[in-house]
Image 1 (tube, one colour):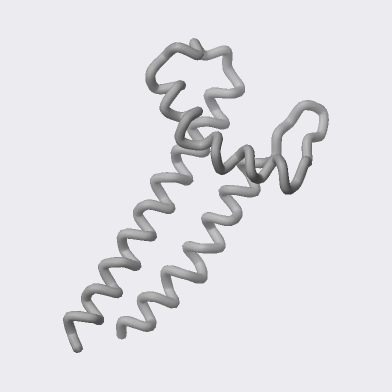
Image 2 (cartoon, one colour):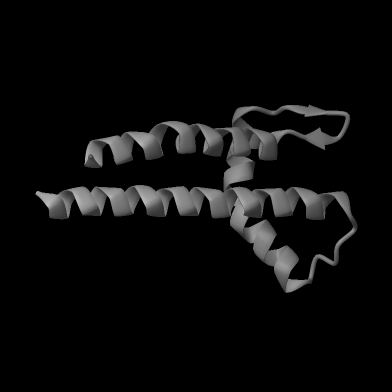
Length: 96
């Protein structure tokens, strides 16, 4: 039984790490969009390719744009915070 508990705890920690990493990638994408970065830069291309599938779905579902400001990164970050506050503790509690 302790193997299953350790596995669930490891999954919770992995999900928490991946969500935190993706949140920083979304923040990096937002910061890069504020400056005129070279679109052929490998870092800029990685940020765009890693976040565009999620951000484009949010833009399709909630076309919220005020004065040229795109709120889709904010919505993605709020979803990540929700998952970190709900899913990860639930998995950790399940493992206890």
